[in-house]
Image 1: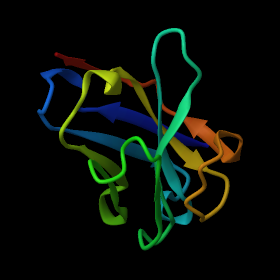
Image 2: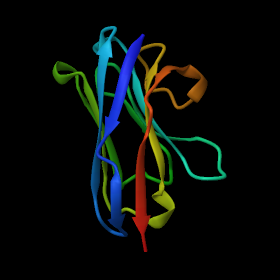
Image 3: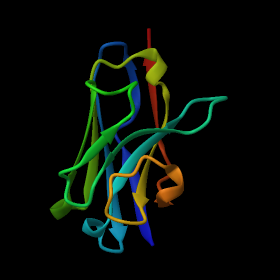
Image 4: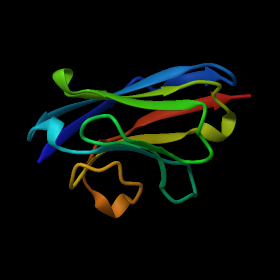
Length: 124
């Protein structure tokens, strides 16, 4: 099992930026793809971004493409989500997750371990 701890969430205004971090421990972090998901009140959890084991391949939801960037630093066992030009509709709890293989998968069923989440609130 991989333990994941998210940080970096908070309350910001529309147009602001945040960088979320996900620190991993346990099984070797560099062996797996990693992803970010989010869930707003009353809505289903949705895919945000994913990165492959090597960091070369990435996938993004259309709603965040061009604004968010996922990256990883395997030496630090950490994955990041840089969020720019934030909008009120980005408000959600953001979860970091470990994939079952090396790919940048967009399916939540492909993820095994999940963090506890970090709240991002974007005001108008």
